[in-house]
Image (cartoon, rainbow over all chains, first blue to last red; front, top):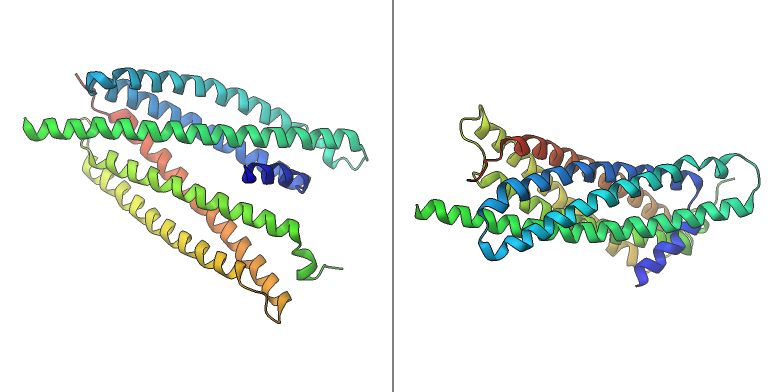
Length: 147
Length: 138
């Protein structure tokens, strides 16, 4: 896990400005993911579920369940990051508070790991959604050609 | 006084840059799959009939998607070229090499940011439009 170790180290070198930038970027990405969730949910529930072959039904239902859980995770992560971003004052107030500053960096590092993990898992989920929806599209196309 | 490019380009910066390059590559690889999926979706004929300008809108999105696909390929090539320069043995003029790397890196970072913004904005447009006109299956 060399990359992950590097990620941890990376935070040590980050300036307050860079941490602020990362937090804003995470917030913007998570807000975007919220929009994506809605689209994928409609795609799975309203389009894919009614046409997919019966042996794949449980897979689609599982994807819908996982998507719902991700919605909650996204909200919770968004709240944590927003709170973290609002606490940045400690790093830029010009007062030397080594302990608090280290705690802030530690919190940033923890969030970085959480966001990275979340993105990896969410991308895996998306790949599965792409695959199942593509199968549904293919089935519909075949039906149209035969019918 | 400003640090010399060599002093500025220490081990930390090098590792930081390398990590960022690998993140760009991962991100572009995933975006390839997204573009492929969106292309399939737009071509699938799964939308309610009789939507005004449906065909034109879908073609417009497909064209934009193709444009972004081309941009992605260019970015991949630029990153590849940059990686080769990054790994090259140091010659006589180290300082020149360090400032060149820094300049290229910052430019690529800017290009990646711009590209991500464009792809997200197109995805959002496609989701918002197609999400409301999906043909409900019976």
